[in-house]
Image (cartoon, rainbow, N blue to C red; front, side, top):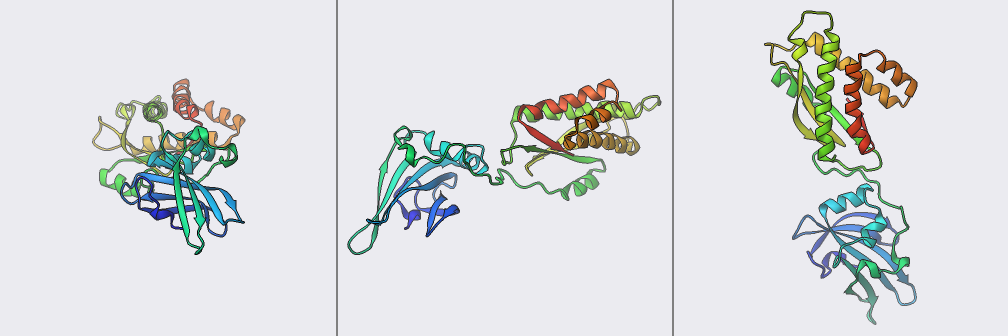
Length: 285
């Protein structure tokens, strides 16, 4: 059955991936060769052994929705049940007397789909879905050497949504919060000393990448010719301990780690966790 040559909007197509295979492709995705950001997910919904006919649904979607479906952000049922008007087609394959198969295509609205044709509720795909290039950890070393300063990466993992993106509003809040925590930790490290430069340490954003989602930042020391690494080293040790305590899932251990720090550090770390909590994300340094 030549799905790739179907007379659907955007044809001809190329096969992308198969999700269910049983004596042929039953559930799969294909992409337009004319418009690369136009995808179709095809799902077999009925088969008649006596007549040899096969009924499939083909739903058109843009690249953003396709990536959301394959990552599990959008349930597989919703890809069909909540499809926009004019995007769902029924494709019936029937054999003629010469055993040649011919497709018949008709449009159908999502609200008119028989319940038996819809996937089971709450069932979805769960595939890692890169929306931008993967994060390359080794590049941090080259970047740090080229700029002669500390460079660090904060990785954000969104639970249940294996997709390489993060809401802009939450990302902005996180950037501000990380800078605040770096400043607070630097002041804590240098408390009781006469170091003025160390207390002016800030963080700046260099780039955003994905691995699931990575925020690459660097240390700024505008008041010094060189970075006071004895301070920033300790800043990262303390920050890493806080992040690790959260990752452990041990509330008692996390409270013990928090109590090692002054109120400003604790409050700024809470500011870091707030935008992550809003979207159910974890964090790694």
